[in-house]
Amino acid sequence: MGFRDRIRGRLGRVGGDLRGRLRNSTAEQSLSAGQEALARYRRATEDLPEGEDAEGRVAVVRSEGIQEGMGRTFRVAGHGVALFRFQGEVFGIDNACTHEDAPLGEGRLDEEGVVKCPYHGWRYQITDGACLTSASRPVATYPVYEHEGVVWVGVADRAISTQRGGEHDDGLLMVEDDV
Image (tube, rainbow, N blue to C red):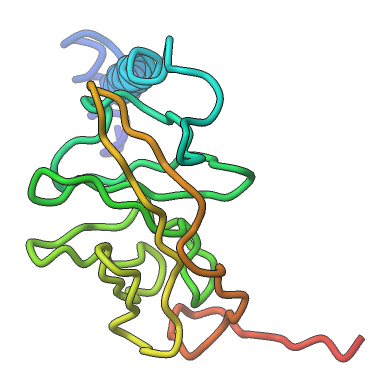
């Protein structure tokens, strides 16, 4: 009897396929967490005022939908906007990193109000969109207004950068097309 057979025998005596049970348990936990996250999102975005306010801003989420130190992404006038709550105030920046278009709303926000891109680590100040990795590559900022428990987002304060690409070491080879 080999090692694997002995392990299978022990698993059979203590309740069967432990790996399968763990896999199913983890899957169930993930499903449950995903369903709860979806329910929180729906509560935070349901029954919002429709249309624009007098300043041209649109309601995107209830205030409780943006937690301190966390980012959330929304579509506003066809653009991806990452919203962050920092020191009690909500800030909006372009969701696309000016390096390789990674979703900044999924990045980590530090105690200085700087979000780190989740792909290659480029850093952006959420208060003004400044790129701390390459000063010539800021992201657009969006005016954000919080009123009566609703977060409103306006039109970008400056044009969204179309400059992309740069040096990084992620193991992928960058290929340029001559076409």
